[in-house]
Length: 135
Image (cartoon, rainbow, N blue to C red; front, side, top):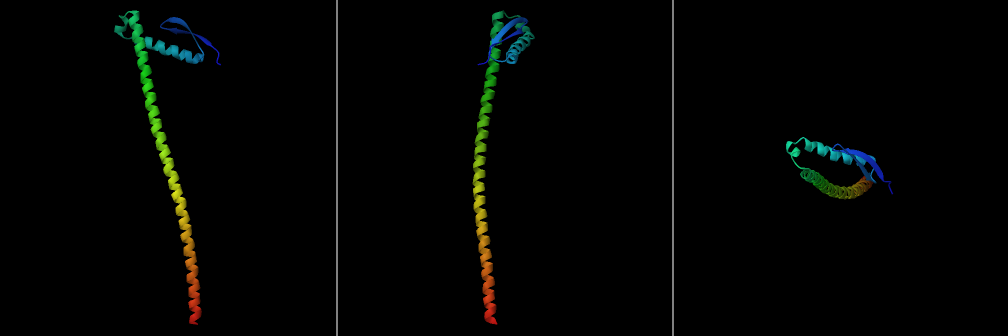
């Protein structure tokens, strides 16, 4: 089991201690994300006029919005991956089928070459017999 990490971070100009089994780097990224959201909102004039409850609700809604957008992107990527996996499966199936046909065609070619060779030998033998009869 991972050890519990404690890390001090500053969010919205206040010091907090985050605890978790995640790495300190990860916990710092989480704090940085939240802090960036605060900074983003502070740039908006209307945000400055809101009471702290409304500010918190706005922050929660915005974070939830980010979450659902990323979740939808993941679903789209998973869907694309599934489609691509199916295409790869079909291409592999077509490749195997083509290889099987190629092997069969190569055997047929070899068989026909053997027939040509045997027919050539037969022609030579018959020509030889015909020559021998005409002498």
